[in-house]
Amino acid sequence: MNYSPDNLAKDYMLDGNASDTLIVFAHGAGANMHHAFMQSMTHRLVNAGFQVLRFNFQYMQANMTDGKRRPAERVPKLLAHYEAVLAHIHQLTTQGKVNCERVVLMGKSMGGRMSALLMSSEHQFERQDISDIINKVSHVICLGYPFVPQNGGAPRLAPLNNSNMATLIIQGERDSFGNQTQLPQWPLRDDIEVKWLTDGDHSLVPRKSSGVTLDDNLDDAIAYITEYLS
Image (cartoon, rainbow, N blue to C red; front, side, top):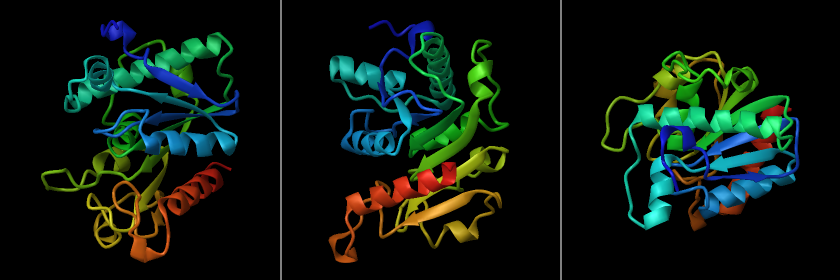
């Protein structure tokens, strides 16, 4: 596979029939678009009537090609890749494979952070061929937003606060990157909607003692998303 800047978005999957809403679904730092979580959420979203495009960031494409595990790339390269994905969606639109009225950017953990950052004033778009797609972006949805960096530090609020984009955060109650006790202490933009999943960790997984299952939490997540986008 060629990893030149003009060929970043070749590793993708388009699921579901053409819909008025296309959800672009970005993976987290440590698991690719084929991970069980990504597949399960995609299946549920398609059943709810959305068309979903999953993709792998460039470092994950390389990991899958040669089997060598690499860390996530730096933010500028991730965002450049994300822009290339939107350019690819433009191509799919011209081919008639996508026919949406709006685009929703959704991501798990790092993917959610990149989705929020892409649509914030922190980012200046480099590509000139994606303006029609950017104009269709209506919402950002973050599944397990990584508020606190892995090594600790101040919460990552700028991608969320420095934006006018309608944003939904779906967070596990005991997420170690930002839990139900921590979030009220942080100055989060007033119009950001936060929904909590019972006893969920960063992967939204509850403990057995909670009386709920991961499937329960993912079903609740879909219900929140469907209501938010209605």
